[in-house]
Length: 423
Image 1 (cartoon, helix red, strand yellow):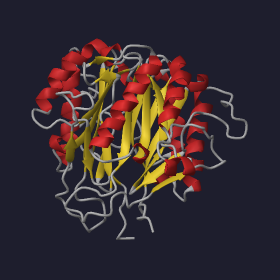
Image 2: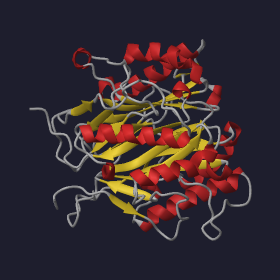
Image 3: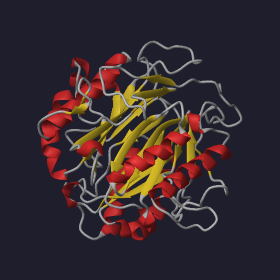
């Protein structure tokens, strides 16, 4: 097995210990997946004193300490996600952000949520390049380059890059419903805004010669979860996009997250993770889009007409967010948050089993809770599925979840065998 990439979980004493059963960073292949960092002070193990500025600085300092411990730098960050309790705090967070990214800026998503662990005002997570890969005792080329791109055909921000490619993935900044010609939100309601978000994504992809059907995962952030049906109407006009994708009924994996507020008071914001078939140098350039996207659904987990349960590309599988739905009845399971957490994780396990993977292959877990106080109850269940506490993790509190659920979970999973080129 020495020729295979291995899941590599790491922790450092120079950053605060995780407040739950998870690792600070989990590397697999050419990416490091960091747990979302809270503004916890190393010395005390508690939230740092002060307001939003002090907390944002602490989050970034914790990220930097983790990166230092694995011989990486802030310039290796591909994507930053900022969760705030109050959207008005974003301006202050931006000032701090600039001090950590004075030149190169990664892709970025900013969203306000209902609650954060420990009552924090801000939580920040990072996705980081890993040039050397994770083949045990056989480091790969350490000089893979990041490919950054901006196009005038989509909104441009001084604080983020529209898309950053590294190895076999492009990670896009979350797109707001901004008309790139005016720099303002488009007129109309949530349908018009959803269409503009998706048009912006399509424009960015067109600028790097990538079709919409190369998207492997979509995250929808909605200010009002009741708008989901209206957004779905628009969404279904963009996916599938090509005749080939329509013939295969290909749809990306997907997660829907309720936001308490979005930048510019938008109603919707959409981000995408995209395959990058030819990789980034110095790898040998493959045939354009030669690697295949492997989509899979199983009857042993809930199915959705607008998403695929899991989409694998290269060395990662991206799963759609799982609700606590019994696949036999199509209904949310009875009971409280413990029963619902168990069902979410059982659905994830069923999906992984269907593609000959195991829970040990999970590198990142994202949890949305209707009540942030439920973390302890969820962790009791969580440790029965992840007894070693290896995956990196993010937990947020949201005002609502689809189907009235108390919890939703999505994961990113290692794919050691990768996906082969088309025959």
